[in-house]
Length: 123
Image (tube, rainbow, N blue to C red; front, top):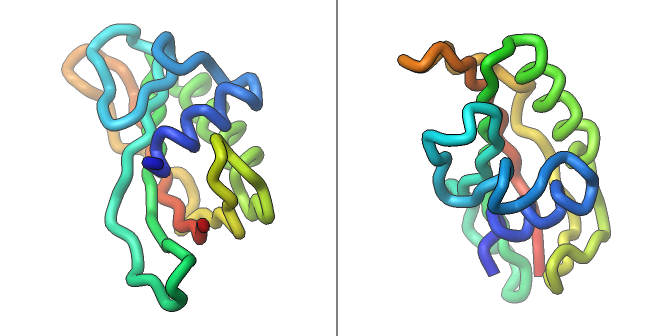
């Protein structure tokens, strides 16, 4: 299963939002203005036969800088150093952020975007 799908489902379970309403995977629709997207990104080669090491990115978009920053901080709090957790039928050995959340600037609709990249190991 896609890591982005798993993480979107996990964020919904943590009351961050609702998949298909304000949490999306693989794309960020133009509407709603306040939304979260989870993208699969490049990962590392598998060192062991049964362990995958994919990366993913979280994007938070909001009309309010403060709300966008608060949302990505909440996401980091539920994902940072998550270990030995089954999400959507996939066992995650760990999830780690690769850097602090960062501002990607304002879009043409005057909505701020924050992003954060993560790495994981899963079976």
